[in-house]
Image 1 (cartoon, rainbow, N blue to C red):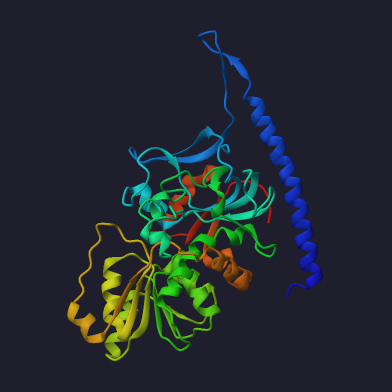
Image 2 (tube, one colour):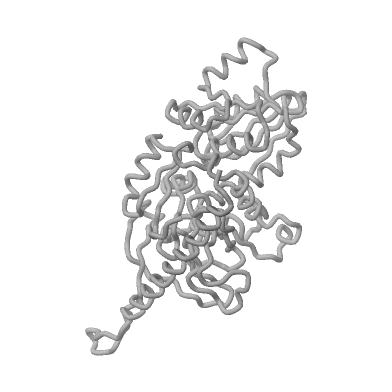
Length: 402
């Protein structure tokens, strides 16, 4: 365990590092601004070259991703913040977008809805954070006036929610800088590292799902379908909150190994082994199934394993064309509850608190199967993900250490 004095030394060192980093940022920004000098145009008129940054941009019409130079974002509204991105995560949704199976912006944009960094520029009316603060970004926004927003369901806002998400319908964090509405920026506690903070968005969705499936008393039997990063995060949260009657189902032997590395003591088995358990004991079942796979056949199987009054939480993102077949009579007979979970709902701050509580014993990249890549090695990252060699890829965009 880290002593209080060691922790204070580490935090003081971190603040000094951030300060030095900001000076570097300021120098870089000055250099970029200097690049915006008048230059001769072919017409003889004086033009200006705009400062640029590196970004991974996706063209939805061609379904192509490329690392290229694009214009540096600038504050135009007094309630905006420019974040210099340190880490940005790759979500399964990003892969679906690149395959053309998930809705997104209809013209070229910067992907990445999971990211954190340093507030490098602040709008005049932004009061809750200051320049130099270490921050995480909630990619969701809302109009604030529709029926859903005013009834506390802003994540279902027709003009906000999913359809205004940074990195899906607006420029996101797979870039050196990202412009963000200030209300979506959260200051990081000193005890949270950037490597932990980049997991705040997926964990905020887990927190939202937890609220939906609650109450979840200790002793509840739980099945987690899928041991990708989301299944592994669910595994960690369940164990952290005291649950021990948990089983994880995953077809990939590599991903089963990642889940077993978490040292929770949970059984992690193949779908075939899961069927064998039911075949050996027809009364065997679970009270809650959390599907993190988005696979129709896995969801169908999960329904058959639910105990009376059981709950199915559909957490994984399935293809819009995926169909399942469920007998309504079984839902009636067992009084089953089926819950869909989309993006987080007022749960981002909960996620930061959860990260603080869980700490490095759970949020360990090696155990979770996470690998860090520089932005320019994006093709390598996606290849490793598609081959199932890792559970998650994270880009280290800027050089500031934790």
